[in-house]
Image (cartoon, rainbow, N blue to C red; front, top):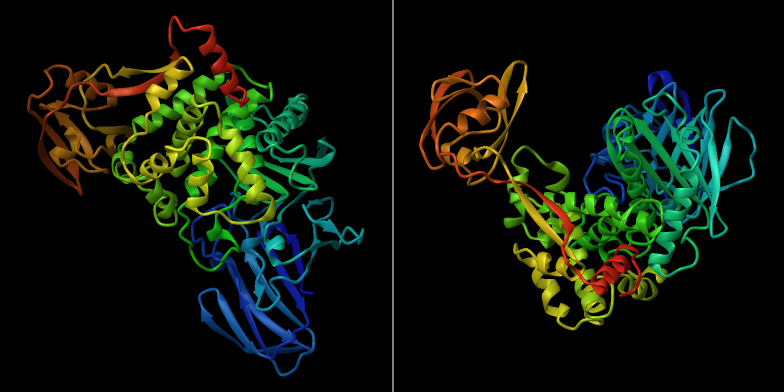
Length: 579
């Protein structure tokens, strides 16, 4: 059994020492380091942080031959035990990388553990050496070694090993249970006021428990899928995100965001999102991820379901759990729908393409991406809402579809294809057999507005107070810079580029965004204007024709004069109850 030993005692140098002890069974040793981690679909080349790889057998160093950037082969003179040594630089704080400081250590083991060919499905041991006063938080079965210097755990196989996030430090854990299943909550970092997170919010764990129970109810089960569960929260200055695992999740949240009026409920939504992934994505998962291929990107046409469904219900789950209000749900859902309707990329990229191109587009966005891309999280959530509402119109709901898919695929670890999903929806409303593939493959909007009317809701547009310039600008260093240009808008038609400096409009100096807005309104839409810019150190003059004011936001609200039946339907939808 390979034994992964990790030394975190060089915390001030941000270096993780790694030793893998192994008794080989073949005369050739092949090693590889994963290039990505499940749940985050981008080749991250973790090998960038690896240093000093060497293999010793019986005290003798063996020659390594590199056969790819992150894989090696070693010829063995014997089958005696050997050790693989290297170290890792751990300086990147995210849910999918490694971060080691004097305050704490966090390891995403996909970035740490080399895979030994032929050992993937065999058990793997884990031991940690920690600085004095630190405690480990590891969602694995302990081996019974109680020594602080070498705490021990065992993973059923390599997949479970690298599915194990490790948090360590002088902080503690708080326990609670969900349907009798033990859960732990670990927080690294304090609130903006400098308080301990749990002490500052004594009702937090109870609310998290309710959200977890709501996730179970959504999936039609009476207990979590895991036998134990670990929450790790990193409170940093800014940031937002999470990564799901079979028996744990790591959350990254900003102290400034937490201090806002909606900060707590947004964090509860993140909890709901990542906890639900315990089912949807981890166990009920696309066939292309069964099993994982850690060295290569894999085209996954159904990411819209994996992330879109989850992004939709994470806004409803806290309300279903009784820890937020209906008004806040409509506010947050309205903001998401507004982002979708204002996205230029939805007219270019289909939801299916967004899913299939995740590896090369969503995680590699730039200043022009919004013109050509639509997030499968965002549009996937919109399609999930549409599917839920159209099913409710016909006496069913998304909840029933999830129940059936869990029973037919998830509980057995059977990967699904698009056809399986279409069939699952069409069982409750036959026209979805053709409608759903159309919504996935086309750039057309699904019938959002008319379905919202079924539950007494409507989207109302709010227009800008100035003419449409077709670009977003920001004041930086006392200069006005172009931050984004809308494709086929006035700025784009004039030839403006991201990174241009705006100098003057109609010979009037531009010093801030307010100057631009007021000067735009001095003339009518459709009239030619002279725009002076600086690009690459040269002054240029462009002709721009501002358009009528554009929509700046959509607001989701109640339709006036609705019936009691409509109100009842909306309340059932908000609570994720059957139609």
